[in-house]
Amino acid sequence: MDSVLTMILAGGSPDGLGPLGRDRAKTAIPFGGRYRLIDFSLSNCVNSGLRTIYILTQYNPRSLRRHVRLGRPWDLDRSITGGVRVLLPYSGAHQTSWYRGTADALLQNLDIIRRSTSRYVLILSGDHIYKMDYRELFHRHIVTGARLTVGTRLRRHGDEHRFGLLDVDPRGQVVGFREKPGEPYGTDASMGIYCFEKDYLIQGLHEAAARGGTDLVREVVMPAVGRESVTTYRFDGYWEDVPDLEAFYRANLLLVDAAPPIALDDPGP
Image 1: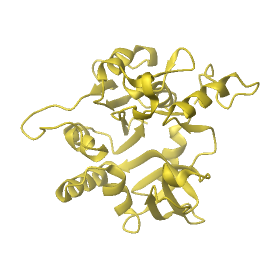
Image 2: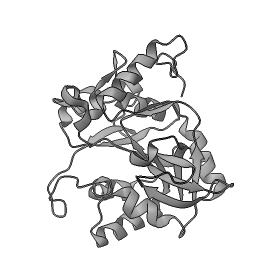
Image 3: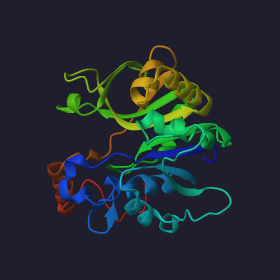
Image 4: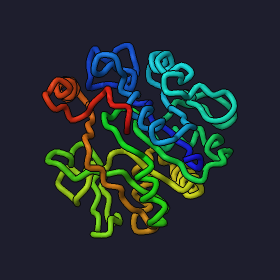
């Protein structure tokens, strides 16, 4: 997986989590006693052989930086090649504002993507609860020859208000994509996982910036459907988003079930 650069989007504010997110980034909120939400994405990366990881954040970043530090708990404390770095927005010749959206966050760090020797860029959300071997998604990306592969799961009731929904043909190719359409659509829901060919991502970000667009899904992912080869990797394991206190409480309670859907002490992906 040396040919893959990983960017974890962790900049959102924890608006729905009340006092839990008052003094910390959402991705730094404790989960399951001794873990933080960011630990799932980071552990998945390490267990999948990914060693060059950047975390893009801005809301109350000290808590996240303090938790990640140099990446030693994940064997990512590397000073020459690889490792994990937390990236904050900054003012410079061309960057003068906070991240205005997911595409803008990537665009403000485009120099890192461009200088990377990696051929592919894996983009993840840092606040989801799941275990995945990203090597399987990457294999799917390679064998299909896609420009973009989207990590998905089967659509559930209520997803139309929370996630992007995809219409997928029998070969797993995306033929339609609607972001939070408000009504049932297609077969799959996006997990916020995207594997791009690096050159195609750079092109898409430049095109988005020229239109004044700031959102990765609306400005880069959705325009690719019908124009480029976009495929899916459908995940059938446990995956959960925790947008509010009720969902967060429910996800924690599942850990004490006789057969919990996710084992936190299992080192594997």
